[in-house]
Image (cartoon, rainbow, N blue to C red; front, top):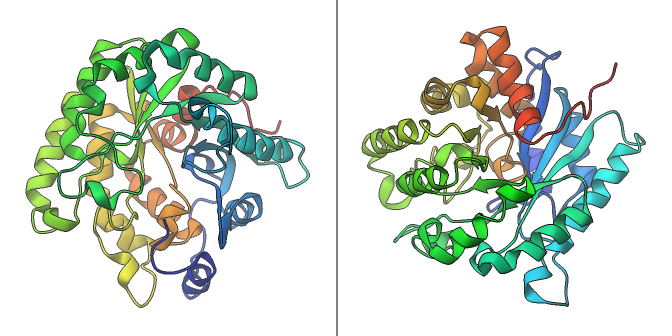
Length: 346
């Protein structure tokens, strides 16, 4: 998930470029990160705390599924509960205050196979019993005829249109749950169809809808941008959809900026210059109150440090109003994931 370098190697690489923190008093909710134990590497509480203590005022975070720590036994449909149980334990440790005022994993997005149709209801209910922090599910739907095999978890073509999937999706709203969508740019129309069919269910588009810049798309960046932009504007017409602004540093199945291949880490100014057209278009289409910044760590760690990433996002947001900044960095994530005052001290 972090490319050819190990996490330790990435830390050493990033140590060669350390910036002053921009706007250090800006309150942040990191709307999207992962945690895992995948020998020989681990990205768990100590590693995540090291990121949060690197200078920015991150008050709370939202964990999003990455298919780790599943139960080893029991019914197949219930195995993803292991991830929710694991992450809830990390959140409980964080809530003790022993590791600082931040509230890690204040919101948890897990996984349930929506293709089970109505039979997914007991799985969703079990997730909610496992953690009061459980907020919804992500059933990865990214598919591309040429890139499908590059994704660690490949989805079938047309998953969001599948009748059984939609029967399962229909169970989310009545339980007050959300759906995180990880798709590619040419699937935005399918997500718009899904959001329109279930207008009462909150839908969160991850990673700006991935206007791909790798593989066969590397030489078609302008064409992809135009197709992606049209899809974003159409999706924005559905008021139940919000967007996470991030994931721009992903390698292989991402944007293809290539910063991870450089001998030295890119500056936040360089990152902001490359990322700005994408982020600004989404904010223009959806409005700041439906957009939230994310780190997508440790996946995006392959491109930049946590400190540099948030500096880049702050540079991109420089032209927005104070109210818009408050929404982008903190307020939208709190509202969409119902985090309340988690991580806020009086």
